[in-house]
Image (cartoon, rainbow, N blue to C red; front, side):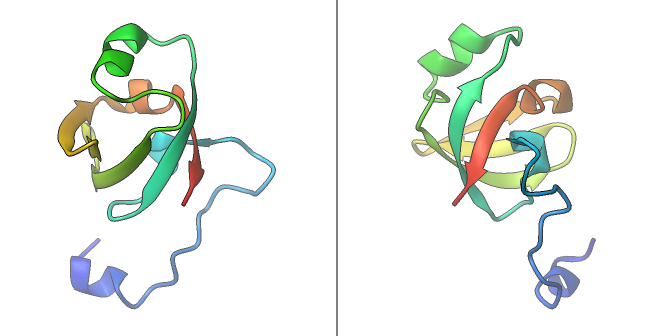
Length: 90
């Protein structure tokens, strides 16, 4: 989607309120707080790099790979990994 067009669209998540939200569901430009890292490959490495429970994450690009910023550090995650990170929208 073109960036200029996104400014005119409401920022409503397509995920229902009763469903868990994953990092892969967060649109570029939005922030979220990590609630839980599921059983994903490299979870310990992600925690060491700052992507741990209660960390605030800003999604920079929501493609594949997903690019996010945690504690000022940019991380790239494939979609499968991002789907294993439960978050709450800020």
